[in-house]
Image (cartoon, rainbow, N blue to C red; front, side, top):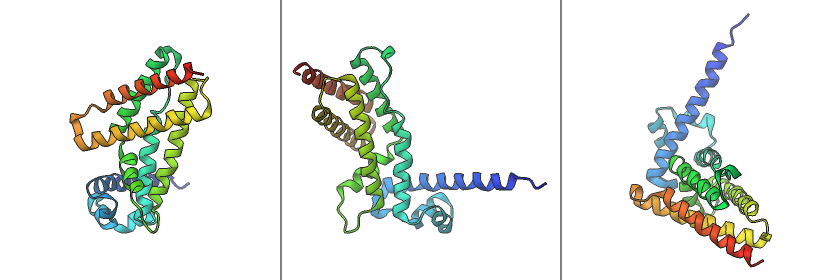
Length: 208
């Protein structure tokens, strides 16, 4: 009976190689942006031949899209409203904002690279930009669900307005953190932003 160990080892090595490639891409793209990122540079950074990179990814664009997807999946786990046991609606949304900010500090790549691509205009739209816009839609739906759960009296238009404001504000705070680095307490800023959005939602709900 043949042993399955070589197959398992091959699969494990493939997963490890893919992660090394993605990690290297994050570093290169963070330093040089989309245009400055190349398969050759990623190969030099991760120590794997270009042929290995092309085995996992069709081209640079596919590689950047994979980085955005991986980082987003990690971050998305933080976008969950804590249960009633956490406290009042304000305490729950503040706790959620803190989790989201901490996750962005740990996994900022999808937002960092995505914002770069979203602000650029190219004759041929990179797949990375398309993926980022898709994950933005998912984010919008998740935040809208939170707003609607906390303030069921609000109609769809009000929920959409508050969600758009919440995401736009978070974008601005993230950019501020990227520019100023450790001098900025992103968690504290996100908590304050969540409180502002909560208060605005409460006022709108009271007017219904």
